[in-house]
Length: 567
Image (cartoon, rainbow, N blue to C red; front, side):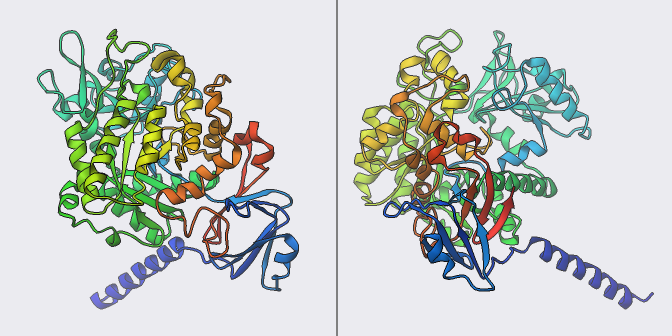
């Protein structure tokens, strides 16, 4: 066969692969016209909150009303979906998470303890990692995700000696459920260049034993180089992880996902897969401030270079402190059960107060938006001080600065948020997943009653959202709604009855208020004519099932008029 013939064959082969790829990844077109009738439509429109039916033209909601009026728009070409009394809502909007993090469970060992998983002790944790190690080539990282030191029998973190039982030849890492800690084995410490002489980084701790040797536990900024190493998945693994996350989010009604601390490498990959149609969900993206500090300071970061119809940069992310359940959230008063016997220990800031002021000032100076991770009330205070100082110098009427988690917000701080125009995104699901331990270990009964204080926000006119921080906890929007309405811990105890919210407020926090928080309220978050048809069908009505709303099933998920999931 001649060279020219070989070239033609190769061209035809790769051309065919390209066509197949395009066919496999193209975004499906919505029906020209479809209607949803005979149901309960919770519109999230305050002026007309409940309807029976809607009409959708292409990707846009055309009309909302009763079944008779909507059926009058039907022609022979219309697709008619009879809801049979089920409930239609706007698609759930992830106010803060780490997409596609939930897909990591398809690639790594799941070390979760109840109520998420079933790892009960150190032996089970080690065995899970051993099983993962068997699938890895020599020299490859063995990774486990979501161990919880306060939920296993030993009530401690694993150490390098524990993980050496998994392997002494391969690097092994167990990531804490908060994603603010990691434990590595001896081999991994060697690869990371950490020994007894390595100093603690600012805003982080290399935990050491009584002889000064690294135990393998790395806190906060001490684990950043590790995270870059172990989370740098290859293209194929990244594709598999993303597909798993897409499926997970779709099955639970999420139509807009959030990348809440994204590197530029992650942004490039996710935007590419969004453009290809691999990711049907819309993405709101918060680039890491640390990676973009120079561009922010010079005012050269251009969000429009990234933005598409389904990929939107919505503000920079600053991580100001750590995790309450990891004892690194920065508090004004000590933890309830002293950490390592230190009765004065209050956690610590990951960013110094002076540096936080500088970072926030530069963001406001150049007209960017910001979301600041603040768990402890001391960290919240620093953030509010930095925001107030920036606003005095660079006034902004509608800046919508977000405090992510805002878990230990005091009443006076919520009142201050109202004055400054700050909007919190509460991690209310902590009530369910860690509420018992917040009460008994970390915060004590009085402070634990008021974690994620939604009712204080309502009383002060502070618009807020709720989120799940996935993969810290599973992407289950109705679990977050249930936590806001019922305030039940995983043991069934009520934690913070005075902070309960009504069902419609909780649903708004996962739909229209989540859209508003990131400037998307004109096109997403409610079922109104002219807005995009991002919808979810539930098996029952949340207004009639408040005590078991988390048990309702997602029957259908629709994005831009296209059904991406049906149960």
